[in-house]
Image (tube, rainbow over all chains, first blue to last red; front, side, top):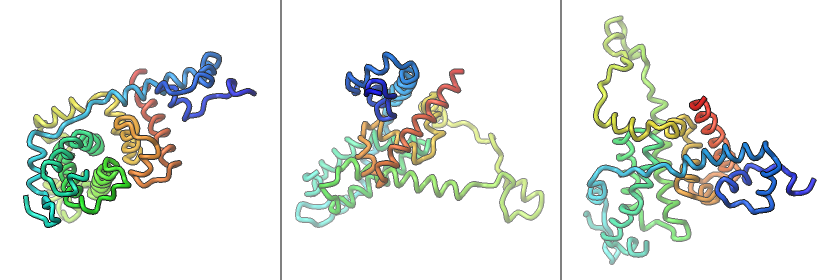
Amino acid sequence: MNQSQMHLTTDELELWAQGLLGAQRSFHLSDCSLCRELAQRERKVILELVQLPAFAPTAGFADRVMAKVKVPTPSGDWQPN
Amino acid sequence: MAWAKAGHEAAFRELVRRYERPIFSLLYRMVRDRALAEDLAQETFIKVLNGIKSYRPEFKFSSWIFKIANNAAIDHLRRKSLDTLSLDGSPSAETPEQMQATSLQVGDRAETPLDEVESRELGTAIERAIAKLRPEYRSCILLRHVEGYSYEEIAETLELPLGTVKTYIHRARNELRVHLEDRRE
C-alpha cells in the first residue's frame, strides 16, 4: 500500500480541515469516500468552534481589577493602588 | 511584560485590556454564569498582577494567565460538584414541614435579565454541545480552536502530557460532532 492509499490519521484529518495538509496526502480524499466524509464532518465542527464569538466582561472591569492590585514601584517596593 | 515587571500601572492596565476578553470568554464557557465568570476573571488578574515578580519569562505570559484562569474554573467546578444540594431538603430537617421548607424547588427561580443574556449568548447548539463536555475536554478544545494554541502549548499551559492533550481534543471533537448531528437529525 503506498502513501496515497493509506487512510488519513486523526491528526491529518485536522490538518486537512484547517487547509494545512500537504497535497500528496490530500489527494487520498479524492479516492476514499470514507476519509472524505470524516474530513468534511471534522471541518464542520472546527469551523463552528473557530467562529465562536469572544465575550467581554461588564464595563469597568479593568478598574475593578486595578483597585485590588498592588502596583510595584520601579524601585521594587509595592504600593497600594 | 518587562514594563509591567518594572512596575508601571499603565502596563498592568494594558495586560488587562489585552487579555480580559479571552480570559473572560474561557471562564464564561467553563462555568456558564456571567457573574461568576467575571469574579473568577477578576481573581485571575489579581493573582497574576500581584504575582508578576515571580513570572518567568521563559514561560509564555498567555500560557501563565490561561493556566491560572483554567485552574480557577476547574477548582470552582469541583467545589460545585461537592456542594450539590439535595432536592429533598436539608439533611438536618427532621419533620416533613422542615423538609418542605428547605427543599430545592426546581424551576421556581424567576428569570432575570442576566439569565436572558446568558441564554442568548450560550444558547446556540455549539455552545450547548461544549457545555456537555467534561471540563478537562472543554478547556483543551477551547484553547485549541478558539485561542488557536498548538497541542504543545496546551500541554505546557495545562501541565498535561502531550498525548493526553491530543486524546482529550480528539474525543472532544467526536463528542461535539455527535451532539451537533443528533440536533440536526
